[in-house]
Image 1 (spheres, rainbow, N blue to C red):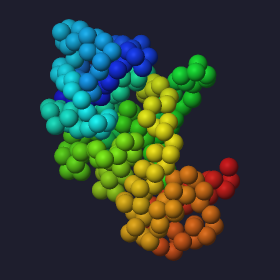
Image 2: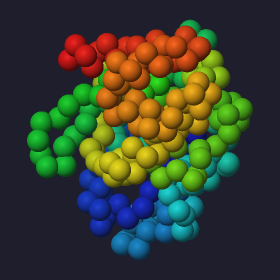
Image 3: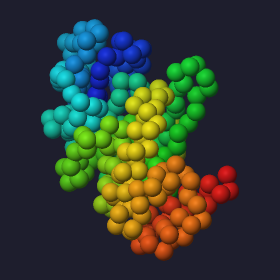
Image 4: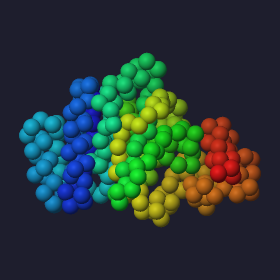
Length: 273
């Protein structure tokens, strides 16, 4: 069974009701239907609860919890604690599926290739009505930015059991920290080179300064301090401003081949493009 976890707050007042309804429709249209849907509401006060309770009464939501929380990742951790499935899928209220075989294909790949998770691409819909774009999953970039988003991922529940929950102290970069922990722990994934999910752009990651601070902190914690890189070095790595001097320092200090390969890719790509 798959446990689908959806964090939620003030869907109506934030203009995401249309996306939420699409999310619910495309979830119910999946060819694989052995899933529970856990919805964690952060104490909405705009009529969202009435909307959610209708889906709960119809059986389209399995479990609904509504109470104040501090952030998105606290909500996700609440869902993880009660999840009954062998696999976890996180779906935000402004996502919806681009295929009705997402679960089916993801499970087939996990079983066929013996991997711990699957991931793919997502289509970003602009809030201002501009043209959509595609964000591709790419493990090569893992050690300087988010390689893939959990909206495109099906992950074995045992990975969360081993690595622990999301870091609730972080407002934005907790999912990135989890991804790095997963990769550094040697967990393997399978990539679908196709668009699996639609996502609305923006959200909490639009807070650029907080994003820079938190991601740099994650890089420093997960490998920077181990290899004598400073927090400023990590900020430059995340902002893709690696100087020749910093690159030389990285090549001299870093002993992890996976990290070196990723940072070398960033440095060479940015110099070319």
